[in-house]
Length: 90
Image (cartoon, rainbow, N blue to C red; front, side, top):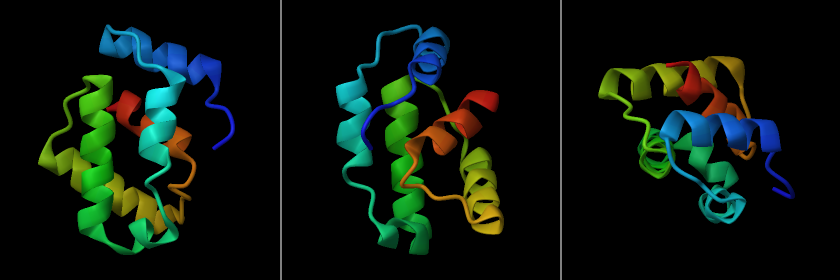
């Protein structure tokens, strides 16, 4: 992940009510591997990390919906941007 889009970072910061740095996002994204997509437990852990960082509560039901949507769409979680956009919409 070279650069997190500033408009998305701004939207996350606005919703979270705090300033989340691009560095923090890159730190989490750096732990994402292709294997993350293969494991529901790893995907759940990633969603919870992003949720905690962004101060956006995500219910277990929403986590299941996100995982299901990711699986059906073939979304690439190496692009943390897609995951964050899904969480902001919830």
